[in-house]
Length: 261
Ligand code: CO8
Image (tube, rainbow, N blue to C red; front, side, top):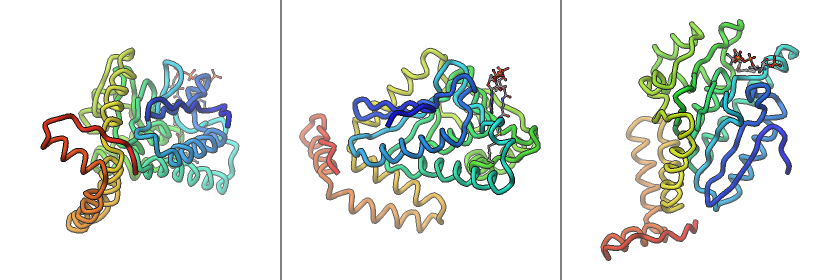
């Protein structure tokens, strides 16, 4: 399918989705969510893909939030539906069986920060800005931001950011634990790709197992999380990747993961 609001590229086991409405700073509208939903299903169904990168087209924004021009025309029930739609699509990123990296190249405001927070981790350009400024519009975050930000940075920092609507720089976001790495703007994609390629060189089964265990264990108590790890560890051991990885170590050679599920 030809997309108009996003771009999906797949190269060498790495998928990249660009939010592609640069004239509106990649703001999230209904049509974009429909396309993103389809792209995520395509990625889910292509088991050759080992990593997803999400980034913004153009040099100014990752995503500057929900499309305010579209939002103002909604009645409360349409707003509720739109909020739920965005939540479900972002949860789909989080639920992908493969790692998702946000490459935040500029403004990541409102729905933009919420999209990045749904990824497994975030690399950002020096000029990136993060924030949930909905309060300044008389709104509240509606694509999971009240929940994911608090879980990522702790309740007090999340409350301060949401109650004040203030934006923070990439460096501050790193200090808060939102961002893993800050890069020069023209080195961001290079740095993200380097990490994505390293991840893609790992065994497909182990990668999926690790993501599944971390994700499923997160919202449980430690013992339940460890039991989930325990079961998946056992299952992962019978994979060809596990046989290859451990044999390669003992034979003092580099493993050749065949990438079979
Ligand atoms: N929605 C629609 N259009 C936008 C948005 C947006 N969020 N952000 C920017 N644009 C458009 C501008 O209107 C402008 O269009 P035009 O050229 O036609 O006038 C174009 O993009 C360029 O923007 P600016 O001229 O404003 O660029 P600046 O560099 O001067 O400023 C900013 C950049 C600071 C990012 C500024 O554009 C801005 O403040 N944008 C809005 C940021 C914001 O408040 N985001 C939160 C939105 S609300 C949200 O995300 C709620 C999520 C939950 C919704 C739940 C569903 C109900």
